[in-house]
Image (cartoon, rainbow, N blue to C red):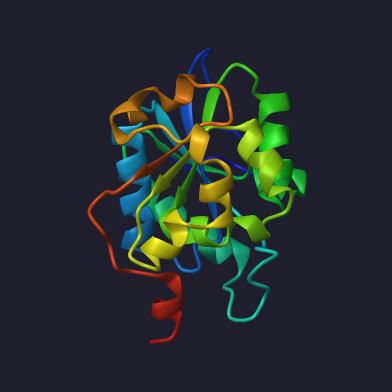
Length: 201
């Protein structure tokens, strides 16, 4: 379901368990959908908010499609998925970093129980994100396995530093109820699509 720029947040209710799934989605591919669908089911979430980023500070502008073009691609895919919503909050608020976005969501939508959702390839370089330690301390996080460098991801600085906060896979369904820091690595069936490979074709 698409959400307009005037109303950048999807509908909410107190206690709603929401997966925040941010990214450039440049372009959207089956691997992204695999991560989102796996997270919703295995984390027992009520909804997934697809937070399409106007710009990724780590990737720069080279080769990136126009924001509206990427947004339209995600909207088309999400319209066929139950409980998945396109969220334009990042563009509406002018945030560029995930930590700022999370803080804004918590301030503006305090009634929800959010979980940050990302692919395992992002875990490998998570320590390069702005205020990554603060982010891990502010929201439960779910990492869905991706084929790119799975070993490097599991032994990344974030994974090692927050190892005591890692939940077993069997506890994934209660992640949204846990205080941060709390995270889970879900070894879901691998999906080999990646945006970098698609842009290089």
